[in-house]
Amino acid sequence: MDTTMLISLLERLGWTSLQTVLLVALVYGLCRALPSLSASTLCRLWWLVSLQAVLGLFWSQPLQLAWLPAPQAMAMSATDLAADAIHPMAPELSANLLATAPIDQAPDIAATIGSGVSPMAWWALVLTALWLSGVLVMAWRTFGEWRQCRALLAASYPCEDAALVQALQLAADAHGLRRAPRLWMSERVDAPQLVGPLRPVLLLPAGANALQGDALDLALTHELQHMQRGDLQWGLLPALAQHLFFFHPLLRLAVREYAQAREEAVDAAVVGQHGASRHAYGRLLLQLGVAPQPHLGVASAAPSTTSLKRRLMSLQPRRACPRILAIGLTALVVAVGVAPMRLVAAPVPPAPPAPPKTV
Image (cartoon, rainbow, N blue to C red; front, side):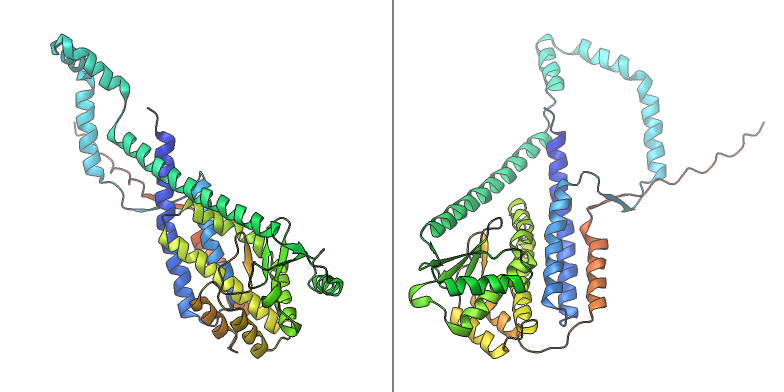
């Protein structure tokens, strides 16, 4: 049974999981050491963790770091000498073993040698089956979320307010978007939502939860900012990493921090670039409250009370980190943490030359 590919896959999972731990520790340390880092920079750093995980699993040629100690030259020399002494006797020993073995045991020995099934092979099969089962469970859950998203869109209807549709188109032009998202209304949502990475649909709450006036303008600006940043498309990579490494708690932490930093970055853009009042925007976040995140999309509301509190705290004025420092830290994380790496043994030092023979 050839399990070479399975063992290689498990090795990649193991090494990548270990490297993810180190990269998460690095990014977390930077976040704690430099609280002035912007939310956009934090969003990039946490996104790079997911990039490292996906690359580590699919990259077939990782960087070899010869940091492990080299094998003992003397021990290897002794082993080589023993192997050289036994090697000429190997055919005779094998023939004697087969000749002295009982007749009824000879087929069993041949079957054992020919089967090639070792405990390592069985462990590789079991672990690979468990990993594939977890990935399939995650994929099935995502498929269910996609069906719920389709059902939500089926229960919605296009916005019939021509003035609102025109205002959305003008706002999309101001954000540099080629076309505005489709604007639909739904009574099943409590906060504006942008769903669908390929053909985005902007869902606005209808009925008792409908937004009016400045609150509606701020909510539309928030969702258009997501489109301008391409968050629906960039978010596919962390989702893929979370599916492949469903067993990794620190990767799930990195994905949550990425989503939190993404929302804080959009909040900062709405307040800073578009001149919105911090108090008015904070009141909007409190009005939207806490709501579950949409399936396959983003929403203006916070997914939890802790997330809402962090977003409100991020609206307070604070000293900004220099842009050159943020770029340098991002480049540092890319250079030392994203590329897949493997620790290997250092090369064996050459044996000392033999002393000259005396006649």
